[in-house]
Amino acid sequence: MHIHLYKLIWQVVQLAIGYNLVFPMLLFLLYPTARNKFKVNKTWNKVTEADYGIIVTAYQQTQSLPDVVASLLKQDFSNFIIYIVADQCDVSNLNFDHPQVVVLRPPQALQSNIRSHFYAINHFVRPHSRLTIIDSDNLVHPAYLTEMNTYFTKGYQAVQGLRAAKNLNTTYACLDAARDMYYHYYDGRLLFKIGSSATLSGSGMAFTTELYQFCLDHLDIDGAGFDKVLQAEIVNYRLQIAFARKAIVYDEKTMHPEQLVKQRARWINTWFRYGGFGVKLILRGLGNFSKNQVLFGMVLLRPPLFIFLILSLFCMVANFWVNPAYNWLWLIAFASFIGSFFIALIQSKADTRVYKALLGIPKFMFYQIISLFKMGKANERSVATPHYYDADIEKVMQKKA
Image (cartoon, rainbow, N blue to C red; front, side):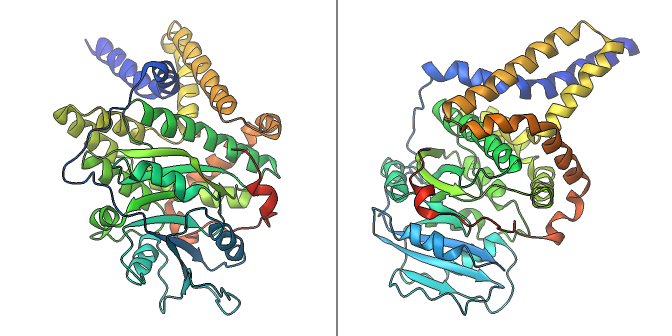
């Protein structure tokens, strides 16, 4: 009796881990026939005025701000005001002589994305109906706001854009970009197409100001992870987060091991803090017969990429003693994952440097394992990723994403 119970538990554990390998391929196979039947929510889904408060958050570093502001001022849609929240920054060299740029220097340290966002909202020069969040290391495509408008005019209240790589100058930057291509393709483009929501990525995202305030006004979140809480709140109210793959922001990719470890430690910490939201969404979705909530909850439950890959390898090794026949299924699952990973790179038109960098995956995963052991105090060590890359704006903006 006990042996049968142990076997059942082992099968359940393997299924819980292994589905992460095949889930992307299932999305890919469903994609051609999928239809996102957007349903109007009478409470929320209304078309708002296209007036944007663009919130640019900076923490201690300001060297990238002139570039991001220059790219924002080149937007082909002009109804916006840029709000730079310079938290613990020296703003003496920030001289933006432009009526659409407002520099805000909080008198006290905020050390939180949400606090910075609400500081900007509370200092809006007019009541903007929409807001979009941009990091200080981003560059923004001229059509960014125009593409966002496409979804807001359909009644969506939350939209995630595409974060493309600003730099591919090191192996780590290329692998970071490959990871983003994988997630944007499956957790953004495909997940949205089949009727769920795109996951939020921290920047390059836009919301109605009303929804953003409603979801987060009562919360005070330290460190990283506000986007994880926000996306769970939005889907919890049966709203869909749209994915605008032509609303492009160019994001700085990690270039150095130390930078990678600090960033990933914060991200891993975030998953352990907020991954449980997935269970609540799945249960709520089953009760509501909501495909959006169930699928999105499954995605929130998924561990970071390197963790479920390591756990899958552990299961394979364990099966050499427990049940070797299961390893045929694991081989199929790994083949499915590898295939889906390359599909994402191909669909994202990855640079040849990204493919060449794939040989560095073992070292990339090694540093993420180090991050796992440093996640406990990740937010105490740093609240933002340092920026090192000086971009040639014109070359970046001319790239095809």
